[in-house]
Length: 183
Image 1 (tube, rainbow, N blue to C red):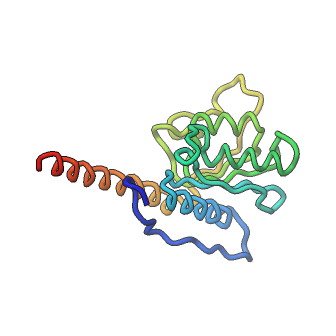
Image 2 (image 1 turned 135 degrees about the horizontal axis):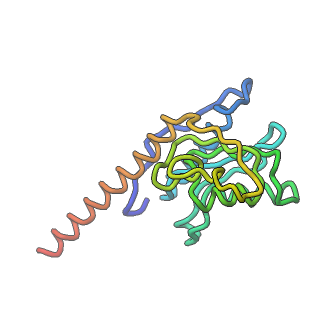
């Protein structure tokens, strides 16, 4: 643990292997997000599915890698491209726990991801309908099929709890520093 977060209070989700639908794959992405929390990363997870099987899975590694581009989606797209030996992911579906940001939405366009399924909408930075919809850019040569709000409550609760705890820890650390400075 570091000074900005605590143990993750959320349990993994165990999807039924009998019904491999959007909820099944989003639960897999959610479990990736839990891994991010455990190492102090913003809890966002992603999986990429091609022909009914997961070919890539990742979670945020921005802090660990000291790399602003190490978002779950970016890492999963790179893994998937390496697995299939092609940068074009036309038939693939990306499942991600939070609506992709401008960078990740752009990467989905550039890698020709066929479909993006996300959990929590992002009205500030989401580029698949939250703040703006990248599909509305008429000059792009690819558009994404978008399926929003799958496991929305679980994904939203996870990310909100992370930031609430992070703010609480930061506030407590500030109080401790202030107390130590005054003694």
